[in-house]
Length: 265
Image (cartoon, rainbow, N blue to C red; front, side, top):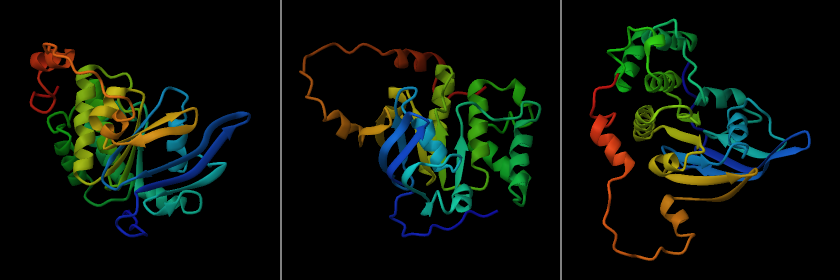
């Protein structure tokens, strides 16, 4: 199955949302959301639990119908051209959807075959290399660490090379080392040209990963922009000389090494 071509010009946003609304009975979850996501970028949707992040992702991935407004993904209207949208995207939920009985390679091969792709084994091997899982590829996923499972989950979402990937709170429940591994994988996605919409409630995650950030609160986008643009919304801090002390991240990385340079479990 091949990814459908983009129907609009190359500079058209990968994701465009205008006036999106959604209610569940008397509860208004989305109240007129507007947002654009540029192609090949990482866009972080930041908000607390219940802000409407997952509801927005479910609408964009055609799992849920909006009550009002309009949304396009890869140039296709999510309401009228759902099949093309689904061929253009991959969705990774809050918990890794991997088969623990199978090996890592078997998980990837299974997804490739379900997508009716040729050379499923070669696709699996390429993704194992890309996510530094080659040595673990022949092991059952039940033996994987949390970070390895999440990397495999993201690798499975890339079978078929979808141009748009939704990551719904991908580091929920992970330890610090596993979070860094996932962050590295997300950065590699965007570097390869994939558009990533990331939902998170972790401020440091949005700060480290996103090209642009939107803050969603009670179903509305309060602000959006680059990290520097959002910081300029507050008055500048008073500058005083303070001796810099190592941060907890500095201590952690000095002891265990980064996921990129150290040997992964």
